[in-house]
Image (cartoon, rainbow, N blue to C red; front, side, top):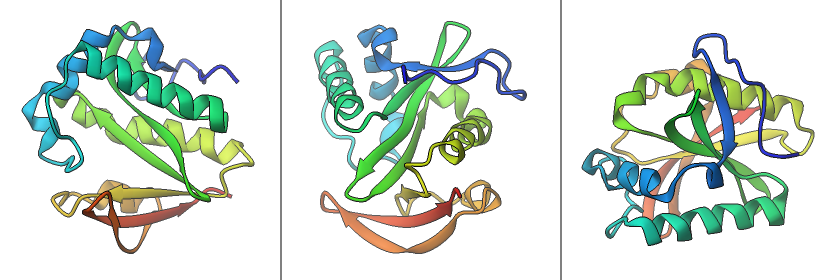
Length: 167
């Protein structure tokens, strides 16, 4: 598997999932340096520069090597929209989605496309989502069929945990 899935998402023309290595590190650094990102990302600390972006991409590529799946860059044509995907957390596959602020409205369409991928992958019987308590707009997640299972501590921060069956 090369990290790509179908190029057309229906409601987001030309949407494609690519490896993060296809995005210039300075583009990822610019995205993650936007102060609006930190509002709902309690683990986002410190400055993001090109070197931090390269380290981030290397860590996500290590997930691909270890688990055969990981985070993608979300692209519309060649335009970078953000990143996210599946990361193995113990025995569970957690789904994350981090879009540029001007692309926030594309989240549900991108999530539907990623979850369609998960439903086709026998390794993923369910997906978890960890959301910080600052996230108030949970209806899109609930519409996808996710159910809140409680709260968890992750790297010293509290998150609301949701689960979505994919089988």
